[in-house]
Image (cartoon, rainbow, N blue to C red; front, side, top):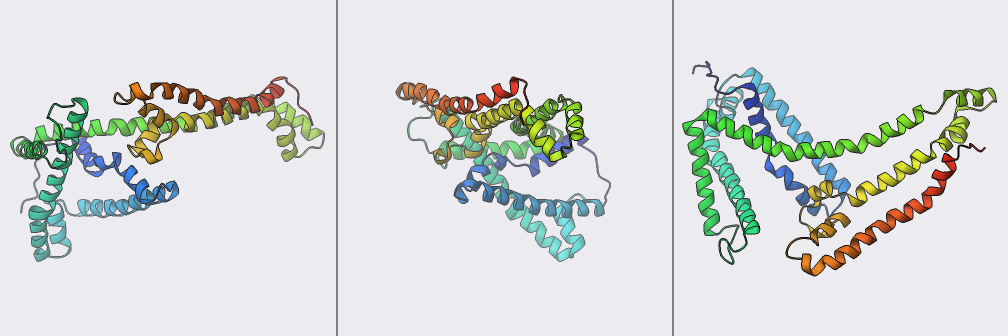
Length: 315
């Protein structure tokens, strides 16, 4: 067999194809399933993700090693033949060609068709009639067959066009993940704000305390920490308000499971078009109630803020 491979994809397209294969659409839906299986136990759910990630890393290292050692075009089949033997490679070829890929592709296009039907029936009620089965109804089956023929035809007639299609879908898939990363990156800004504030405290205060016989711990407790009270209060209030009113990250985690709805998601659900007329007054009342814990927290902490802003250090 000749190993002279014809290059049909560029580096960016190849990266998008690998990323699209590794990061499946299940990343948007499995979080709810994991939380449901763990009974809402967040540490257990995170542990499940960590274990799954560790297993995937082992598989990734295995395939990367084989890819470097065996430069062939048939993937699993060639790897099986090279590591175990021709007979095993022959059996692997039949398994991949007859069972694995057809089943996987069938499930993928069926799930795509099902979510397409869910979107159509949600955006255009009554467009397909009443009582349409979006899981296994005739429209879903027909759309599944259309998607399957379209993808097979695309890969057969124009591999380069198929690569561009894969690049487009990968970019679309990565946009929500990028937004989540940007949103999560903001959670560490409190550290830098606190550090910037503490950098403004004159070092002369510490040196004067050392001259008076104070230890580093006494200097920190009686001078530095009291001067940081305004920023500590600010961090306390913002750290409470963030999770309390958070919507984006909470919505990604709980999806449509009402059992795990947070306050913000519960209020948002009251504004959906089928509930807004019935629940709008209660939504207004809920919006007022949401502000009560924040107001109470501010009332109890504002005295520390005022004492520190007066400019005196006691002790």
